[in-house]
Amino acid sequence: MQVTGMTAILPQHLSDAATHLCSLLSRITHDGKKFRSFAPSPDVASLEKMEEQIITALSHVRTIINSQSSFMCRMPPEIIARIMEQVPPPPHPNFIPIHAHPRLRFRKGETPRSWMRATQVCRYWRAVALASPSLWTEMDFMSPDGRRSIPNIIKVFARRSADLPLNLHLWSTEVNVSYSRLNPILCRLRGFHMHRSNSHVLEQLNLPAPLLENLTLSPCETSMSLRGGAAALSYILPKIFADVTPSLRKLTINYFNSWPGNDFHGLTHLCLQGQKARISDAAVQDISGFLDFLSQSPMMEELILQNSEPFGNASNFATNIMSRQLVKLLALRVLIFEGCDPTVFIPLLCHLSTSPTTTVSIKHDDCRPIVDTLIDSHTLALQSIHFSLNVRCIEIEILDESIKIIGYGGEMSLRLVMPYANRRGFPAGLPHVASLLRLLSLSHTQELVVSFQQGRPCAWHKSSAEWRTLYSSIPSITKYVFHFPHPYESSRTPIPLQCLIPDPTPILPGLSELEIHYHNHTGALGIDTRLRAMLREITAARADHGCPIERISLQLIMPTGNIVRGGGGSLEDDIWALQQTMDYATVQFANPYLSEIREKERNKVDEISSAVYY
Image (cartoon, rainbow, N blue to C red; front, side, top):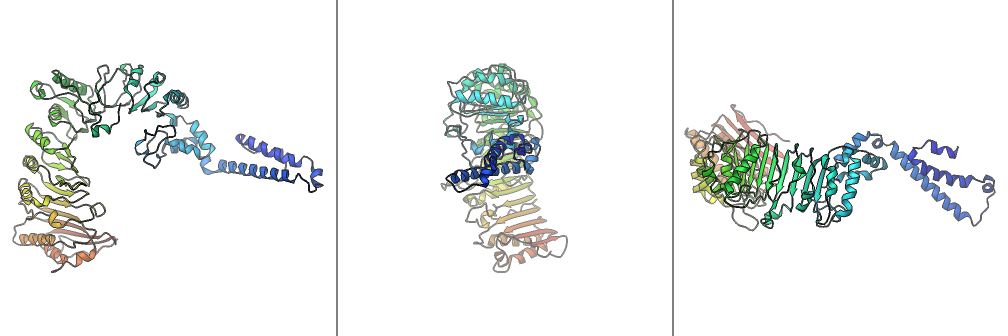
């Protein structure tokens, strides 16, 4: 075997290891006669050391050869680059990059360069990463010592990304650092995101950005607004990118009251947070200006205002510009007002023309002024309006002929998401029933869904008089649905069914369908007598032809033993008697521990299907 021929069969990048191995073997075989007549001598230690070096070198060569012959290393570089792009962020929620300040923790472990961990797999992957421009399009400046990091990052990423568009993220920048080094790459920017950074950076960005599509400007931490710490912050946005951003589509601005030197138009997504415009005599002009601003983006798809009043005081808005023409946003899909004054956004809604599929979500601490303002403003003609309560209730959607209150578990014609008491034990209850009744009285709701959320049980069932008023206020209802939390999402103490089903049972003149979804995974309460009493009441009413209910569906999640043994006759007997009086009735029993499902159904037949297990 020719030792010197080893380098010919190895890849070029293994020549160093092969050369080192050859030199070691040559030292051993240099004088064959000497070693054949070798006798024990003090040089044995040096020979043993040489042997260890040979073994180490051979092991290193075998490792590299195996890695080169593996399937992963035979994959095309384009596929490996795509794999690296899909590398998830580190699992730890408080991941901190090595070069980041301890205070700069990424939310949910997100970092634009998570894929760099894949370069530690092998040399081939590292070589692919260095030669793949698509992996070097995300630049993030996170080091507090920006004077050293910014030039290096710009130089490395600009070179390795070739001519591809770039996305830039700034995290807590330094005041005494010059960011004019960014100007050479502004023409390649596709996204610019300034997070918790000083606004002085923007003054140094004075070249056009013709490829910019996504712009985020947040000079302070967003969560500060929830604590009231950033309520007094306000900035005026200087002219940036020489006011040349023809491709801009998504704009997010936080805590900038105005941007007089920038003409943003043609937007599809706009998010304004913490916009506190100064209240002055020119407030009406500010509102008109905001509508003019929206009119320049007719293809707007998403508009979000969070804790924002970008048009100042709107007290004179309704009386001074009612003659103004509507701003048409026919492509608008989502319009969200969160934490905004109803007297501000309601007049704005009156001057927007949207498509029938537009969803307007209004999230506020108190639903009463929102409902009252909606009614008083005669804005019920809007196809879809949502408003949200921060007391663990969410989103009521007002339609032209029905009302939707959308909960966590789905979407129905009318969903009342019943809140629980908070952790401190304060009662939550159903807030502002009177205002809700005013709203219901103007609608033609056909489906009522009452749902519960996760947490402690509330005492809303004690106000049965209010519920009877609620039922009577919507005589058009034809379907009544109750939802109780999934057993693994509900509290440890289940709520008795008399808390879920009001007394008396809402047998309304037009009610034709009834659904009850009840989950009691502990089985401590067994079958509540209220459920059986309700079934017997409906059965008796149907026997006297006084109940219009034609369809009933019960889904009971509880231990099977509690279902079978109801006491004073079984629940199944009551269900059987009820099924004999109607054309369609279905009952589903589920055992959460045994995954046992027992169904009994009667759909225009006289027989009940057998038990089903899966």
